[in-house]
Length: 150
Image (tube, helix red, strand yellow):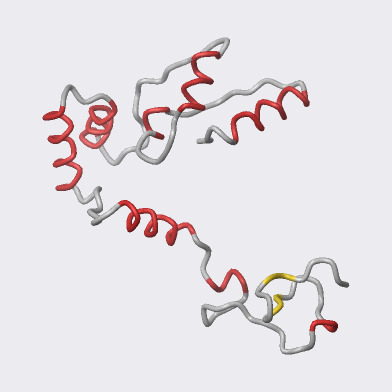
């Protein structure tokens, strides 16, 4: 998936490199997580769009059928029925507000503290004076990386 801000950069790069783009995506899948306009626009202007209509990545035929129904519910009651099935299957997480939901998603995407060499959960800082810092170390006074110094 790509968003509306990434799409123009991708097209500019393709034009600059004189290459074509083959995009694979599902604008219906993007709707719950963000704007799907970039994918939909690419489909409308594609020279040879292809639409796939078979689901292959699900745990069974019931799950595949449910996701296909979820893409285009017949009406409000149909959407509520699908939502109830997803909830009973344990595939929906209930949160009290949108901010809580965004926070939970963001936390799942963050790398673990050990990715930064910090088993305790906080970035390490050097106790040496700033003049003695090496490139890539974090300045404790300012909380940012020293990039330009050798």
